[in-house]
Length: 250
Ligand SMILES: [Zn+2]
Picture 1 (cartoon, rainbow, N blue to C red):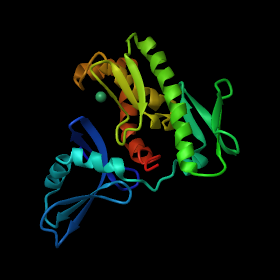
Picture 2 (cartoon, rainbow, N blue to C red):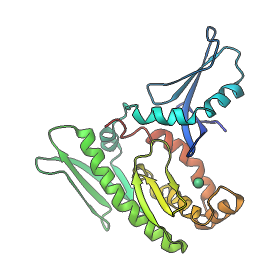
Picture 3 (cartoon, rainbow, N blue to C red):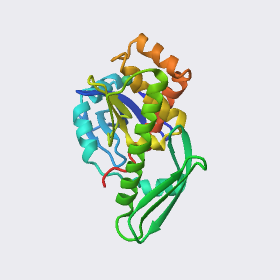
């Protein structure tokens, strides 16, 4: 079902051939339009231009029939939201069940990151010359691959399940997925989600190792892994709308 989003855009769950994705969308009614038209807007939202009297349900049905097209378009749409600027403002990265205070600086040598678990601090240095955005993205993704994989192993052990392989990828509109060969794929942007929300996404995929669907049994199992499932689940859509555009277009 479509839902309200913080900043006025709305989100719709749209099926694709590989499962559902969350799509921010904007509906524009036009007195001149005779058909429904779909394009991708400046903020990576699906822009639905519909005839004035077009029923809302019909517009949504059209949107939901275009999942593959939308996912394809979102992949090659660069965004205007800079990860570098976002991190300068928020100064936090999350992993291993905790929150790290980030210092983002420059270096004349090779880029690097170093973190301290006891101090909950991470320092990242990117080259003082060149493309800051690409350098930041590359370091953050490296950090994400490291800590997300470690966390998956940790939580899998707690849940008593066995994971095949963990990959950390750049999905454009989903937090994670699980394949039938027990590979769990997670979005690097999870390091931008606070620890309990990040854990919730990982636990969701771990639950799929036992229940490969979204049946009542699946939710019951997830609830046993994360007692605050409902609360956390409701926070994922707004977070996706805010964080998914980051780091695209490098
Ligand atoms: Zn799922």
